[in-house]
Structures are given as C-alpha cells and as structure tokens.
Length: 319
Image (cartoon, rainbow, N blue to C red; front, side, top):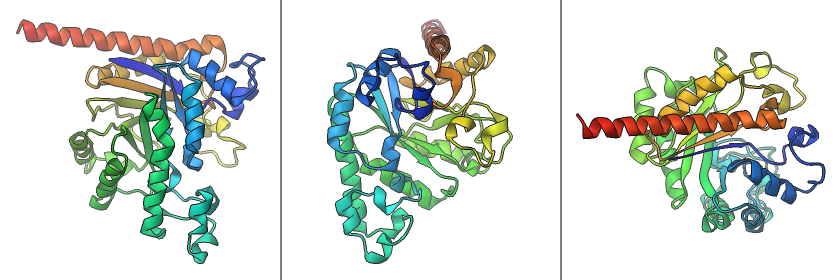
C-alpha cells in the first residue's frame, strides 16, 4: 500500500506570496512544479476545472516531475454540472455553439448539443493522455455540486462519467449531504463499491449546512482519497471574503493529525492506496516545519495500515 500527500495546486497565489514555501530563486511555474515534486509525491491539478488544458501543457507537467509522482486532476466544470462560462470552452467548440448559447453568461452540460458534449469529453481525455502515458495520473476527480441530488438519474450520470473516462481512474465527491443521510447512505456506498469508484472523503468544519459528514469509507479496492479543507468555523460560510485563502486558512494541530491518521490508516488497510490533498490556501503547508506535519500524518497512516494488515494475516494463519 502506498500513502501519498499533496496540496491543491503548486502555483496558488497565497502559497507563492507567503515566501515560505518556494526558494527565492524559484520564479517560474515550471520551476515551482519541479521544486514542489521534491517536497510531495502528488498534486491536485485544479486548473482543469476552469478549462480543458492543451496536451502540450500536461506533457510539460509530466516532463518536470520524477517517476512515481502523480497528479490528481480535477474534472472540467462542465462535466460535473457546474455552471461553465462559454469562454472556458475550447475556441473552436465555442464557435459551434448556437448563437443563443454563446450569448449566455454560463452554460450547463444538458444545454449543449450532444455532439459538442461528446467532442468536449474527447478533448478532455486527450488533454490527460500525456499524463497517463507517462504514468503520472493518479485519479480524475469529479466533484459534484450541492444541486446534484441523489437519484437514479444522478447515478446513471456517474456511470456515464466512468464510461467516458475508460482507462482512467476516477474518484467522486458529493457536496449534497443527502447522499450520506440515513435514507441514501447504504445505497450510495453500495453503488460506488459495485463500480469500484473511490468515494472522496472530506474533512471540513462540522455543524454547518454545507458540512459533509466526516465519513471515511472505502468503496474501491484501488484507491481511497481524503481532502483536507481545514476546520476554520469562523470563515467557512463567511460572506465577503476577498479570496479562498481566508476560508481555508487553518493549521491542523497534532491531536487533529493523530485523529485523521487513524481514519486514513483504516482506509489504507482496505484500499490499494490512499491520497490526501490539502488546500494550498491554508497555513498548514507554508513553513518548512509545518510542511513536515502532513508528511508525518502520511507516515503514521501507512505504518498503522501495515500493522493492521499484518494482524489480519496472522489471524488468518492462526484462526
């Protein structure tokens, strides 16, 4: 089992502006990625949410990272039922939109002609192919919004997503709490396990309307994913913040890391690997001594998972 830890983006502005993570001589995005890959074994690439990257961009990502490094790539917003600006579509696809759709401020996937949707999916796959060919792709991450409700139609769409991304590992995060309520929880987990799709667990401040339960369930034999958003109650739903850096500004203490390490170890004992992503906006990864703390969480989780696995093997051999 392999346990990895990384953050959401290596060119996050607050990370750069802190002047605590990158050496002063590291100035370009290419050099930042190369340095980042010496500190962590994975990264979440979220620029793909705002637009489909060109294959030559992901080729450079692969070229500037060492063997064994992985990217978890966030889905283009159109594919997760988020509002998408026409300007974020590839220019030639945007030109093929009906005039009425080009004039809209945002679009949803069901509004587009089917042939354009098909082509957008093909462009997205082509964009990720250099990472897959280089062995640099971890999972393609589909984060569904709060208006993506638990229903047979939604489950059918998740199946379609998995089929569209054949050859790539996908992982799914839900933002609507009803997916995990008493009525739907068993069905949600059973569906994901049947399709061998990892459920993306999230650590957030609890007690808010937007808080998803701290559920660490393994639904895939290949991968478990946990995203750490911090536990800043004061800023979680605060209006008027100037940047997401304020919302996610949080430094996990040692007790919280120990608690989280136990949950990730339980996940790692079942899945083939665990990926952990922290928001780059938080302070937890800014200074060198703070960057070491998530890595301690990773090592602790891996060691605990190994102990659990050895214990199960011993019990199997000596019933």
